[in-house]
Image (cartoon, rainbow, N blue to C red; front, side):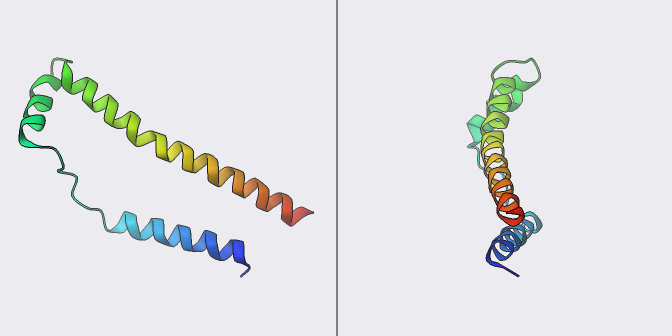
Length: 81
């Protein structure tokens, strides 16, 4: 295996290990959780809070995907040259 393959294999192995051992996601305080649960059903604060959480969660995945796409393209261009 060359250096790039080792890095890619290590990254995939790390990502797989992190997916196999998830941690608890109960990080909200009691009052925040109660307000979000009560107002989510009528489309109030809870719905906006949930959309904000999804937005903040999606940004790192989009950035990492773009980074790995650029690295992959560079790797393929170097391999064909």
